[in-house]
Amino acid sequence: MSDMNDPVVARIEANPKYQALKRKRNGFGWLLTILMLIVYYGFVGLIAFDKELLAKPLGEGVTTLGIPIAFGVIVFTIVITGLYVRRANGEYDRLTAEILEDATR
Image (cartoon, rainbow, N blue to C red):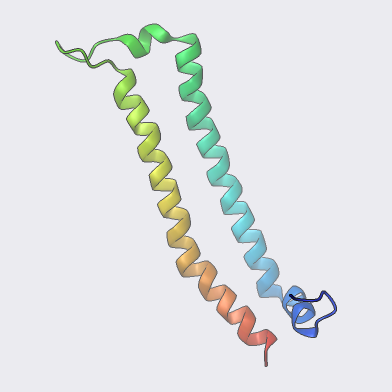
């Protein structure tokens, strides 16, 4: 368990790269969160306030417009998760390694 008085922890917290990493990670996380909330609550809003739109049939079959829109919400969720994972495994992991290397010198 790390102690806040640990000199390595103090060096990490004082490192400008750590501050930049926190800022980037938090900003990107909030951006994706806001986008997800807009998409999800937009879909729920359609369900609540425009059922007729979602109930419109596509072609001659029984599939309605709501099915591809719901599928789009699921795909959007997977895509933004993939974007975050890609960025975390690339940029964030690289910055974390640099910060740890600087702190343990």
